[in-house]
Image (cartoon, rainbow, N blue to C red):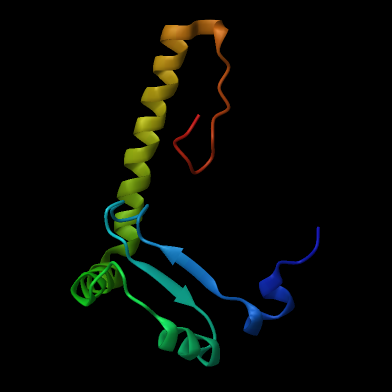
Amino acid sequence: MPPALYALDPAQVIHIGSFSKTLSPALRSAYAVAPWETLSRLVALKADGGTGAVEQMLVAQYFSSHFDSHVAALSSLLEEKLRVMLEAVARELGAAAECFVPKGSIFL
């Protein structure tokens, strides 16, 4: 398997993510991680058509001290939902359905 692009040249990689899965689907707040030379050029191009500055500051403030505990609680909740779904499929469909148990997801 070839090495990840980041391992080849970190200066050429831009990591982009969103908080919609970890905080709230309705919250349209995302982030980018890149070397400052690249990021400064992206900031100049930013056209904010959704999330306002207040929402962005709230996410930054909350996650600066609660990210790990929030993700742990969310993971626990999603694991419970997955367990309930697996039990329901087994109970209602029996041997007629075979489920692949996902790692890190709730979708069967």
